[in-house]
Length: 154
Image 1: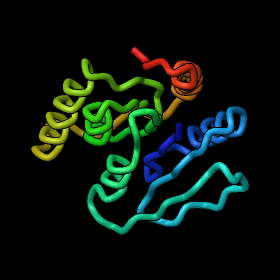
Image 2 (image 1 turned 90 degrees about the vertical axis):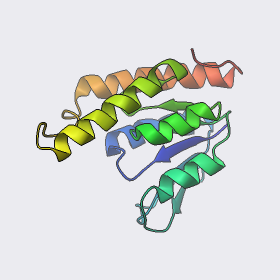
Image 3 (image 1 turned 60 degrees about the horizontal axis):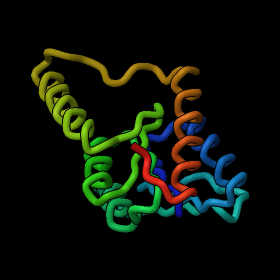
């Protein structure tokens, strides 16, 4: 089992939570981005730099992550691909992407993009809060506990 992080937009505080879990459980972490990332002191953490381009990091993760791995991403299309391939994806605010919710989230994302492009809506997700951080840490712990026992999150 590995933890994949769509690292381009993942908040630093979330990465730190994942790094601590990685050390505690001896799980490898793969950070994928299209730019150089800061160096890490752990042998369990690997940075993978992919070429610039639209969805290149997402494509890399989707192609290399196995159904036994956990993918951390805020990118809903990537999460949809992971879930469709039988994988497990968690967003940085602690919400598990499932077959039941990922299609709806993708539709809402597409609608909001269209509304923003037409000038009917502004902004994106709200500010990352302490509650978001705590919810993520709790969800990550639950996911890893289940997955290490060979069970699938529901």
